[in-house]
Image (cartoon, rainbow, N blue to C red; front, side, top):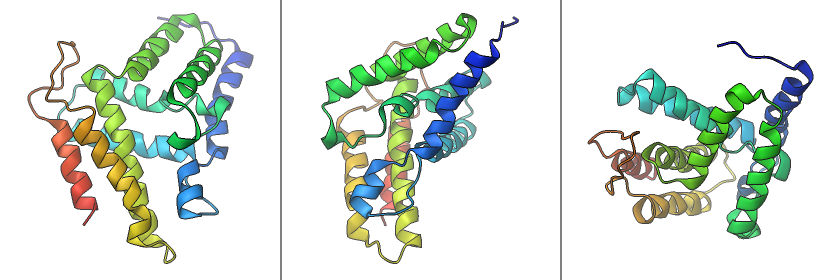
Length: 208
């Protein structure tokens, strides 16, 4: 299939990814008092690396792996417009509304022939009802605690107690909200292995 490209529109679309390089993750600045904290773009890159590791370990096929990469790539793209908020800074419904508007505006800048694919992937992520979308949400939390552990190991001013809220948040999310054991009938099933347990064990290991 061939696509019709408008260079100006594609350039404007790419600008949103470059903008994510400039937006620092607010939680690190507010809670760890870091001057140069991880950007949203760096967070996204790390998530994609983790996605690839999980795909290799679990022998995901190419189609599933690419869908996960695409979902990770766009999961915070709306923040290029609305910025990065900590959960306590904004009402969940308000953020969802702002983020969906931002995503819709961003996707107006890419050709309709593959815009539909990305809108569908975004809606799946946002609804968070399929097993793949749940896994990407898990990996979002997992990347956060890996980054917290990195800051702890490489910054003498950060104590373990400082990063514990990030671990507690991730573990609570996995234990209480999105257990993959409650299997759906969605076609994107990940198989019998409970990947949520896998992530939970990684979190517990990182917490040592």
